[in-house]
Image (cartoon, rainbow, N blue to C red):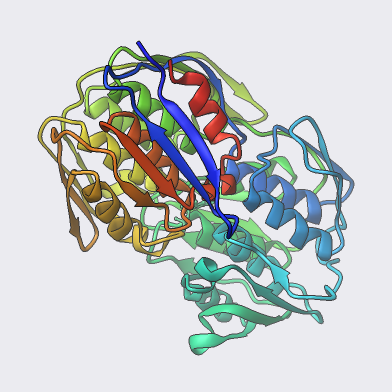
Length: 449
Ligand code: S3P
């Protein structure tokens, strides 16, 4: 069997085209894959390290663009952060309440987690003034979801579009605690409010309609915050005037990055892959459940707990997938994996329905519209729904010119679709992968046999 020809071409404007030529005889994927560190946990390790007392050591940090944005922001706020690498990053914390007033605008780049979590911390630092911004995508994403609850805590925040779009200006205040009933299951909203509650006298509670990822809760506890969790009502309460202490954090591999290989291994006939060191926190494993519903052949091996997070190696063998319906409380547990699940559905027998996922419209791109348009260019049958997609599988995909729309997860999902599309696929603006998966293309080359 011939290997696929995979080329990365840099354009004059510095954007990159990823070209995937699938041999007519097809290909198969084989090997053991190590994936980059979890993005959500990497952000939180840097942030909590920065506001803790003493030193935090981080092993396995994701070296993507998003955590780099977090590191730059928190350096500007006074934390000392050593050069970023996967072996060991040291963060010398400044202690809660001790941010310095930055000399310039804090730039969160493409990262929703950076800007939203940071806003909770900034708003609760009395007497200091901050400005925050991001790239084109981030400046068009809704900030009202965190600005409103912070204003209920008496935060002072100004910005475009009635204080709901970045750039935002924040005059730090002594906040008052609230019980916030979030209308959406969002870890960014939950974490923003909990972080604001750390430096606020009294108890701050967030209740969400379904459980979102709980990395903040786990790590806040490990750093010494007083936290109580009510699983019956999906509520978390943090006690203010907290003191956090530097910790050793080991970042597991990102299940959102593993998801590309789990789908690739499932849909490309004759494949067998083992993805090593995957974080399998139950608030993130919706992708494993969805693929199991679709009949994927996936096994967890060597399950263990590393620094407060469950981890496993995940083996996938190719199988004929079948359609399923993905909706309801599972959605927040696989929200970032829906673009790659749409690719899986394209190769499944029957019609897959994804609903209750309107949040996809306000991610790094409108992931419903963009995924439907790009997959349809390759011959897929994807219909947009207001809050999801309807995907009729079983149509043979053909290589095409497609575009990531600068969204990392879209670009990588299209690359996986291309492995099973005849001919040549060109993915424009493929450099977006560096947000969460800098060596995606080199791993892709390694596993294509
Ligand atoms: C994240 C939460 C999710 C997710 C994002 C990372 C986090 O966003 O989509 O990629 O680290 O808290 P929402 O909280 O907006 O759902």
